[in-house]
View 1 (cartoon, one colour):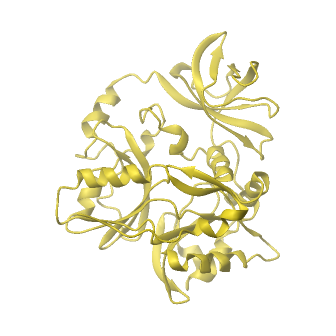
View 2 (view 1 turned 30 degrees about the vertical axis):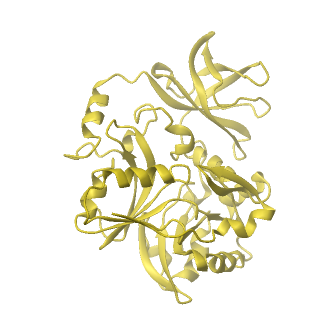
View 3 (view 1 turned 120 degrees about the vertical axis):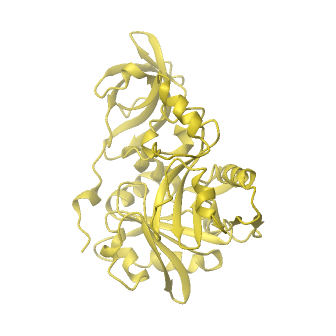
Length: 373
């Protein structure tokens, strides 16, 4: 059974006149609120406020709801504790990635948070595979907003929202709590390598907490809204999987996502396909690379070794921490080694660009050297 809530106001509408709005899978998200460099610097040095309200959010309940969802996942959540979160791939019967999702497990429900671009696809996939009247999938995407904050001092921003010491909340866990008479799900989770937290609350109250958090800057840290463009840079720098770039027409092994698979799971929808893929040689894989900031490469540009085509560019970002451009390329497996020098043909300029493969993480997040006190 699928129940769908009516469309209501989304948080991004409040900033539409002042921001760079992008369309992702038919949904509006903020690309940047100001300039990307300043927003990136906030992620790495201050506290970034992020609106994830356009992400898909599906609440699954009913008898054996855990078994139903677990059958569609790469990660085994059968024994996942209550009030814990997990990253997992949703895989179809052919072993192809539907989406990378975050799961929030409560005693009587599972909340599935999807990417924006794959939101509709996940909804349809859940619906297609649900043949039980006992399982209820409620689309709460429009009535439940998600606001995240990440950065070296994100824990300071989160403390006023809860009534216990924030240092006691482990990574990939959450609590249900109340702030100003509003019920919240408060989770410790993130994608940038910095300290990260996320709050889920009714969309009708989202602007209230968004505005409150923006007033919490002090002499130690600044709180500033950050869009998806800066987030994409930060994710790439620590090799956080990004379905916008990394899974299109690629196998999980080509995308180097096998670490998200519980191979010991006895039974799930994609198991047969995954077992078959394991036995096949992996001819191409993703590898990171860096190149000079003055050069230009775009998605699809050819990677060369001694004028031989060995792959293509999958993603390119400018890393403000490195002072270089940073990318991902899908190349022949024998070249997935750090420190190799090779070339790439720029389709924009017609020039050959020198690149060098690199191992991740490509930068060291500031949070790794800061203790929550």
